[in-house]
View 1 (tube, rainbow, N blue to C red):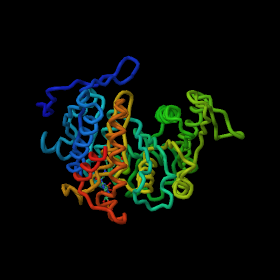
View 2: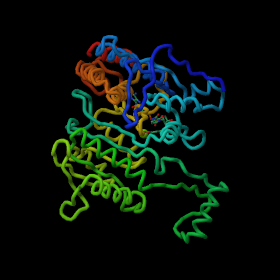
View 3: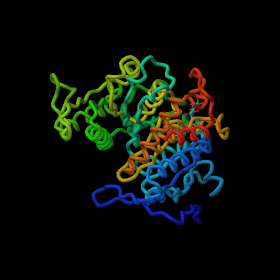
View 4: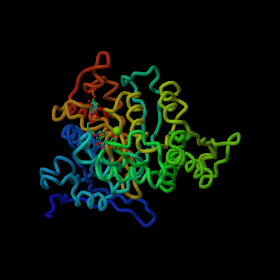
Length: 417
Ligand SMILES: NC(=O)C1=CN([C@@H]2O[C@H](COP(=O)(O)OP(=O)(O)OC[C@H]3O[C@@H](n4cnc5c(N)ncnc54)[C@H](OP(=O)(O)O)[C@@H]3O)[C@@H](O)[C@H]2O)C=CC1
Ligand SMILES: O=C(O)CCC(=O)C(=O)O
Ligand SMILES: [Mg+2]
């Protein structure tokens, strides 16, 4: 198939050295996917804010050359009707190592499977990293939103989110049910007729690489604790195993010692000497405690589906998914993306909050080691919110605020840098 990607005339590829460290030139080429729905609104706003922050921080010494790559509805227009995720998009991500994407639509029930999940799985971006912090002045449904300061490590490659499932009455579903009943002695399928069925894979290797990344983050960022969030009392050999493997890793690789006979354990941060607690909590209890006692939770490691629910819930607690950023990270490769979806009812209206994608780009700049530009984006966000010049999602909850369009909010951020 003929290439549709236009490689910028200037710029170089980011590379990864023998030690696995990212090597970032001063003029990196960075692929981006515009995204469906509100992607047409938030992606241009993000590009503009990032360019302004980089220019202000480095005065022309550093500059990003953006390269558009395609997935989702735009891809079907460019490559042809059924091409949702072209091979050259995947190749570009592997070749250029760092990219950013807008949201992509997944139909409920029938239709295509999630392209977001496909990107994560095929590129083995096994960490979904979603920090949740409060920006002073943001409208929030809780009394002390500033107490919520958590970083979610969501396992991105396993669990039922992977979509290994078969439709009720299909030959495949019948075959799986028949196997379970007749070869595995399963008697607990309540209505085996006309029954859809899904699989929940959870492995030691998948769990440990996620928990290892989370504990390394705790150490590098001098955080207090890691909490394993699971529903292991019910799903013993998947979510329960996640908890057990997580603790095992903390003991065997990080030297954690049991507290009062366990299973909670602790170890000293090798860089700062601070005590780090490793604990666990059952997911339903966690969801009520993050509202009642958020200060007790810091870095979180959890499975794919729990992580999906938890990231939207925590985002709401500090002002909503309009400003909740995220990253999908593998070994030497990362694709940054907003936590929210395509919000189709707002598409193309220049209305929604671009903050989530802009703060995802802020994470990207930090990942590249461009801290000065990242700091300017945070400063811009803090300033725009402090001035109460905000998009509809904040404006409707803030007293005395000025309503700004998506593009105007980006300009406000730039003027506050
Ligand atoms: N990673 C991804 O690409 C993701 C993709 N999706 C996909 O997106 C599609 C739509 O999903 P849906 O469940 O409606 O979830 P969305 O996150 O798209 O939207 C839900 C609601 O969240 C609010 N919202 C979302 N984005 C913004 C924003 N930038 N600024 C302000 N408010 C915002 C709006 O609330 P209000 O109505 O109150 O104004 C919106 O109606 C689905 O196809 C889904 O699969 C979903 C999540 C992630
Ligand atoms: O892929 C999708 O459509 C939804 C993804 C999602 O909700 C998420 O990653 O948070
Ligand atoms: Mg989600």
